Length: 72
Image (cartoon, rainbow, N blue to C red; front, side):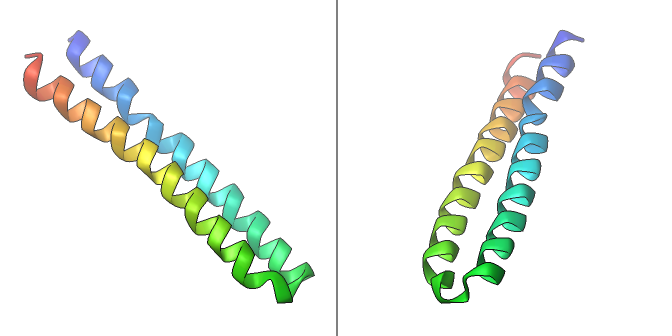
């Protein structure tokens, strides 16, 4: 029972990553709309930030799988 609860909590990292990526995307679109000539720099920063946010979600998913598979 506690294994399922621990895995569920570990998967919640995906919620934070989704919110973070959504906010970053909205801010970058707003910045590109205000300053179109800086699109290249903004896009690079956006992709780097999204990759880091997605990595935390993947780490949470892997931890959840490890909890489920090895703590039965």
